[in-house]
Image 1 (cartoon, rainbow, N blue to C red):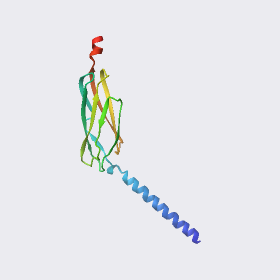
Image 2: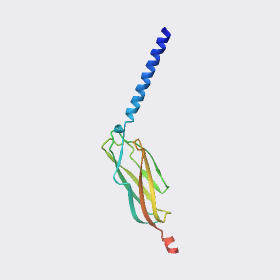
Image 3: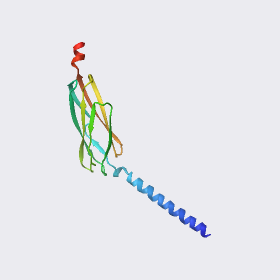
Length: 143
């Protein structure tokens, strides 16, 4: 009988501990307590560029969530783009920039490039896009 009561007490203790752990993790996953990217402009048009021209643009974002926002990584669709992101957390209510540097060397015509920024936010990622019309004197000359 003592063994049964001891086993029951141990089982109840483990069940309560497991429930508390899950409740704690769901509270941390509460959308009201998460960081949120707030973006006002996701496209930037550089206009007409000459082949080899290097240009940059800083995309503004705000953390409109309730937790600090940490940029955890970036991805681009070509090696012609370099991305600089905040190294520190962006606190709730604060804003920061994602700087995109585009090297048009080797491109020609209308181009669309995408930068993906990952963070500890509810949507996990946001995307920024740049467009340009790249002129190449050698290709235009030979046409």
